[in-house]
Every structure is written in C-alpha cells, then in structure tokens.
Image 1 (cartoon, rainbow, N blue to C red):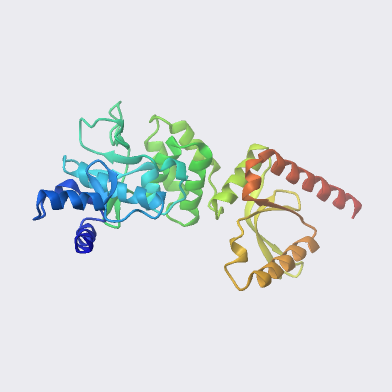
Image 2: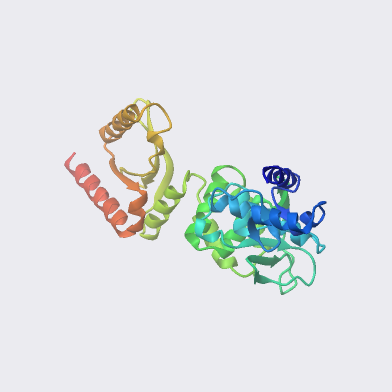
Amino acid sequence: MDRLLDELRELASRKGGVILASDLRGLRMEDAERAAAVRRLFRLRRGAYAPDPPVDAAARHRLTIAAVLRQLSRGGGNVAASHISAALLHGLPVPPGALSTVHVLVSSTGVRRGVRHGVHTHAATSRGGANPVFGTTTIGGLAVTDPVTTVLACARTLPVVEAVAIADAALNREMVQLQALERASAAGRGLPGSATGRRVLALADAGSESVGETRTRLILVQAGFELESQVELREPDGTFVARVDLKVRDAPVVVEFDGRAKYTLQGSPESAHWREKVRHDRIGNLGYERVRVWWNRLADPGAIVTDVARACERAGRNRREA
C-alpha cells in the first residue's frame, strides 16, 4: 500500500497536485486496487482527490481550485480562478470563512452562472452584453485573473472591510496601481456591485502594511478622523525617530496596530521589547500621544475611537499648557 501511495503522489505531482477520477481510470490496475487507491486519497470534491490531507483551509482551497480548473477546462472555453480564489493565489489576505466556495470566471458563451457543487461560476460577459476589460495570468500552472481584475472583482462582491484589505495589500506590494484600478472600474461601470467597488477604491491606501492596520484605519475613518499613513517622525535636527502606522492629521497623535510580530522577528523577545520601549519613549519625547491597537481590540471599535478621541483631547491640553 505504501508503494501505491507513492505512485499516487507521483501522479498528483504531474497533475497540478490533484488526481481526478479520470486519471485513476487511466491507470493499469484492477477494480479492487483502484477502489483501494480512492480510499487512500483525500477527497477534495466530487471526482477530485489529493494524495495527502491539506495542512489548512487555504491549502485545501488551492488544491480545490486546481481540481475545478482541470474539470471545467474539459468543457471548452477559457476558465480562470477569480474573485476570492484568485486573491488567495496572488497571496493577498483573504478571510478564512470565504474559502468554502471556489470562484471561477468562464469566457465561453451560454455559461451557467451561480453556485453549484461548491463552485461559483462568473461569466466574463455581463447580462447586458457589456464585455468589461479583464485579464488573466498564470500562477503555479493555474489560470487566474490578473491582479487588477482580481482586486476589482473582490471590491464589487465582498464586504467593504475585507475588500479594502485586499486592495490595500495589492497596492502596498505594488501589484497594482490605483490609476489602473480606477480605469478598469470605469470600464466596468454598471456591473453589479460597481458602486461598492468605487467606494472600496476610495478607501484604499497603499500605505497599509497589514490587515490589522487596514481595519484600524477604517474604524477611525468611519468615526470621522482624518489620517495619514506611514508617517516618519524626526527630531528637530532631522534625526529619524520612527515611522508610525497612522497619524491623526493636524494633531500630535499616532495610532499603531500591534500584531506582535515585531517582537519575534529580530533578536530575543527581551531585546525586542527593549527596542520598542526606547522607540515608544522617543515618540513621546517629541510630544506625541500614542494609541496602540491589538487584534482583540478590533472587536470593540467604539473603544478604539474613544482611545483616539481622548488622546486628541490630551494633545490639545498639552498644547494649550505649553
């Protein structure tokens, strides 16, 4: 049986990591042996398997994308992973709860739209006959919509916060330019979700370096704060002090999202904590009020808004007393 599993793994490696039922039928083996092979495999969806269980939901989604693309490509027409599935393949931040359905864009005529058997099929041509500009590329041998098409598809269909996080990441990594997104958005004007898509682009910020920063910024923007991203703070003589995630415009108040990674990336936790304390003190010595946001704090947006509002009040009092 180990020899059989090794053979199945080798077969999967030649088939994009997945084995279809048709692949097994092409092997020289008895029915009983073929049935034993299927029992050894991890079922991704009907007629599609992996030799080993995926390590997490994202890995399973990637394998299921590969299976769906192989299965659908046999029906003719061009098919590519799209929307949240494409975002995952591009390495953009996707909410784990959205990975239960594979999204594909199909360019053939007469395609059945909608969700069926865990696959959401999107037609490249709209019901009104419009054919908005879209592009595809290849990642790991899989056809996928290009970054601009992917970001806009997510912007039109996902909740705003999740869509902005994807747009922020794509802009920050220079996978897309805002002008290109705006041009493509204008070309697809009138498509379902276009208004939401334009709102997402208006909220997007290339300065955001994490989902936590994006969510923090959106909470504060919704509360009416005007913010600047990735602001450098310097001593009066120009000496660099720090680059902060967010600064309240026209107020000496900085807001930073603390994902804790900074304490483990360089050196021991003790030395990292010491460097962070020195940085914190230097920012304070410049006269800035500081607000730090953690992941669990994001569940209470009102508390974040209150913290920043109080910091602005303290900064105002300090200015008057100076």
